Amino acid sequence: MNRDPLLTRTQLRWLEWLVLAAILLACVAWASLRGQPRAVNALVQDLAGWVSAPYARDDIVIVAIDDASLQSVGRWPWRRAILAQLLRDIKAQKPAAIGVDVLFSEPDRVYSQDDQLLADAIRSAGNVVLPVDWRMAGVDIGAELPIANLRSAASELGHVNVSVDEDGVIRRYFAAQGEDTGPWPHFGIAMLCAAGRNHPLCRGVQAPRPGDAWVQQSPEVFNFARGAEPYRLYSAETVLTGRAPSNAFTGKYVLLGATAS
Image 1 (cartoon, helix red, strand yellow):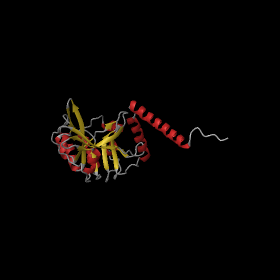
Image 2: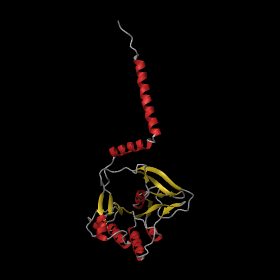
Image 3: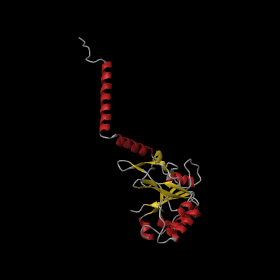
């Protein structure tokens, strides 16, 4: 004799959906109570970035003030006359733009003539970007700009601030940041501007009027390239001693900054 099943197929299907819904609700509740959504989002973003990571562009070159450079030239900070020579050596190969990620917010009080030497080298290159840093002293929030003669010699200024997530990893940046009267473009965008590329955030080196607030606009996610060291890198010491290839920087976006420990 045939017996009726305890649950019909329709009832089984409803039961499966109810169990699945209960599991999903439990996961959402767990994540919300433990403050996990950001961690889950970061994990998904890291996995997606790893899967879709592009190959490094061949028009980006790094000149590193590394440990070998410090051993050869001397401890940091270097005289600005040395940085001026480094710029002249790079400029001689006609790069598209040179980004100098070194802060010059105070004049050189020991070798005062070096400031003018560096300004002359920056002006001669004609496509140098200098950094704008973020400053907070008490309630005073603003931009730390290069000193006046270096700023006027540069082609563009760009901010070098990034956002650090709660796990200590840098994944995002703002395309524009600064006074609400005229935020500065990100350093990378400023390099495009210095190379003559049109971009709505290009603004030159003129400081904005004092504003009422510090703004961060157009958040973007870094699209990291494949590999531990995907971009071509030359030690500053190699450039200063004339051992870099003769076309190493021709037509390239050259980033000059510190990597030394």
